[in-house]
Image (cartoon, rainbow, N blue to C red; front, top):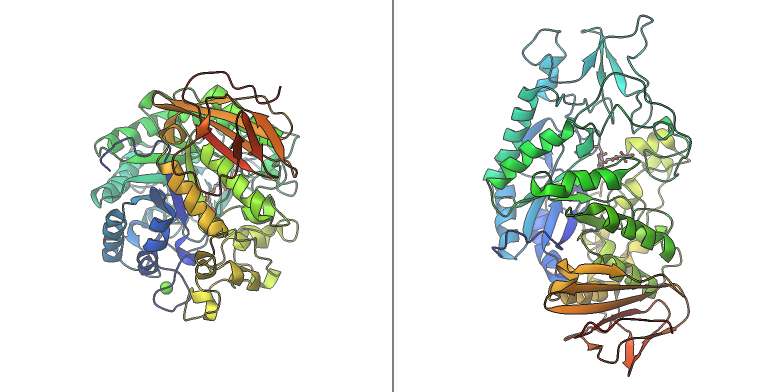
Length: 546
Ligand code: TEU
Ligand code: CA
C-alpha cells in the first residue's frame, strides 16, 4: 500500500536466512530459497519481512559481523538475487526490511584493517581505541555481552579496542562524525535498492561514554545472554559503555535520511536495564526511530500478571512513541519450549492472540507459526560462540536457529538437498508446513486466521488501548478507534471462564474459529485458554466480573 504509516501495527515476519530455505544444496539457506518460499510468508497474512543479515561476513557471529555493508555474502547469493527478492516480495504485497548492524563491523572489514595499522592512518579513529592503564590492564572494567573484557589488546597499535560483542566485532566510533557519515551512506545504498526499512541491531551501543568503570549491580535476571549469573556483563550497571545521550543525535541524522525515502521505517533493537525508558526516548517526537523492539516479552515468566505489568508499563511510558513486540527471535529459547513446555495447542494460540492484540507492531520469528520447539543439541553440535563459551549453564542460540521443516516426509524436511548446517530435530517433522497446511486445527491455520482477522481490524492495528484489572486469570483489554471498539478477553486459566459484556456487544465480521469465545446474551463464555474478541458499537462500560 502507499500508506507511509504502514508500519504502525504491522506484523513483520523475521527470516533467519541461513535456516529458511536452501535452494542450491549447500546446506545453508539463501536468498533464492527465500524467494521460493515467499508464498508461504504471504499466505500467513503478515505485512512485511525482516531479513537477518545476509551481508558479506566471516560469519563469526553468523552475519552480525559484517566485512562489506554493501555486499551479499556469496553463501546467500548476489545483489541481483537481492533485487529479485525485493521485487518478488513487493509483488506479494510484502514490505522488505533488513538488518543493519551499524554499531560494530567485522574485524575483517577494510576499515578496521586500516584502523589497526598504526595510530595516525586516515581511519585511526574510526574504532574505539584506548591506551592501557599504567599496569597494562584495560582502560575500564567494561564487559562483552558474550563474556570477558570488552577490550581487546592489539599488538601493533599497543592499544586496546572496544568490542561489546565478540573480539571479531570491533565497535565503530560514532563519536567521529566521519563514521556517522559513512554509516549513513551504507544505509542509503539499501534505500536506493528499494528496501522499506531497517531493523537496527544493538542500536543503543553505537555511542560509548567516558572511559570510566561501570558500577556494580546486584540483581541478575537469568536467561538472556547478557543477563546471566555466569556472565559478568550482567553484574554491571551499564552507565558508560552504551545508551549515551549522544546517540540521540545519531538517530536524528538517521531519521532525516529515512525521511528522504517516504514510507520507510526503522525498528531499533535496544537491550539495557531500563530498555523501556530508552525505547520511549528513541521513538518519541517523530524525529528519531519509528519503533523500538521490546525484549520485555522474551522472558521465562508468562504469568498473566507479569505480562500485563510489562505492557501497562510500556503504555504508561511510551507516549507518542511506538513499540514493536515479539515473543521469540534468533537469540532466545523457542517460544513453544519457553512458555508452553507441554505444547498445549490452546495455549499456543492464546499466546499468539495476546501478541496480536497489543498496541504496537509485532515481529513473528520464522517457525513460530509452526510452534517449533527448542532443538536439544549436544556440545559437539554447537556453533554459536555464546553457547560454546557458557555451556552447559547456557546452551546458546543454535537451538532456536535450526532449519525450517517444510515437508514432514522429505529428506532434511525439504530444507536442503545437502547436509543442513544445523540438524533438523526429528520432533520438528510432524510440525512441518505441509503437514500443518492440510489440517484445519493446526497452529499454522490458527496463525493465518488470526493474522487475516487482525489485518481487517483497524482497532487492532492502531487503536487506543485500555486494560482492565486482571481478575480470575483473564486479561481483558479494549482497543478503540473512531470507527469502532473491540473488547478482548484472553483466558490464561486452565478452566473455562464466563464474563459479563455490555448487552450491545456482538461478534465481529468474519470471526475465525480460533477466536472461540461464545456470546450468550450479555455473557462471554471462554473455554480453558480461550480467546474472545467481540465488538461493542457504543461506549457502555465493560464490567466483566459482577
Ligand atoms: O543482539 C543484541 C544483544 O544480544 C544485546 O542486546 C544483549 O542481549 C543485551 O544488551 C543484554 O543486555 C543482537 C543480535 O540479535 C544478535 O544475534 C547478535 O549476536 C548481536 O546483536 C551482536 O550483533
Ligand atoms: Ca544455499
